Image (cartoon, rainbow over all chains, first blue to last red; front, side, top):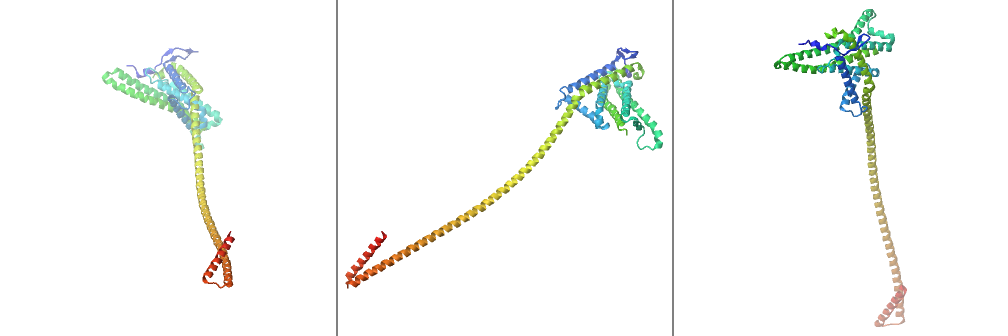
Length: 243
Length: 172
């Protein structure tokens, strides 16, 4: 029986190397592209008549999703400021959700189960929040390291704590998503491996669990995409409002 | 874990995932979000407009109803006043007509009485004058000759005949 982690191994399908940097296309990238193309196609289909006032079923689903994200952005960033970041946050939610869900198709791959990818996104968001903070408040942005109401004597202690807390944000953001996706797929791989290796008399049981866990994984895919996006909104909201 | 061991795939995963997200972000922002967001916004505007319009219409209807009720009330009052006025007017006319009729009847009665009085006086005058003439004529005859009863009767008849003739001549 293969290792349940064998599923996470990647092999180049189209080898590409640019100036010694490996940019090969592998299963994870293909799955991500298929997911992105699918979701973009669905969006175009939903809004093909220029978004009619009386919506189709598909348009209604996307409208609900848009309103949901809009509510989230307005809640954490603010109504006016939120408008600037809505497209980014909505795209991020859709991208992560698509990547999470596409991996649930047997034989596919979840690119969000790669720490390098979730880390890159989390780090990118961290840099983005710093850029927004400095662009909006200038050097006053550094006051984010001193929570309001802290006695002056505590400032030398609070600043390093706040720096650590800020640096921990991208780490927790990336590890949370990666760990959830990896764990879910590992459990699925173990259960499915059991179902395949056991005789039919007993094999139906792990197979049934695989189906149940698969349903659970769909919910986790939504929850993780929501958490990742919500925390991004919170981080952006924090640097805009400072405290 | 392969995710930590396969370091060589990190560069391609990071590059393609960030690039794919960038492209998806651009495409969604440019082509996919605007129609859906516009539809949401226009629907919100339409619903808000419809609600405002309905509210306005309701207010107008309320004012209209109030006005109509007021007009109806004033029309009722007016009609009541008109009926009262008509009643009192008809009563007045009735009374007036009665009074006039009574006065006319009284007048006619007086006229008739006056006429009757005149006629009676005239008749009495005439009778008096005829009686006088008759008396004179009879006396004349009696004085001229002593007459027997038969003659007296004949002379009286004669005098009456003369008086009647004279009366007839006067009437004619």
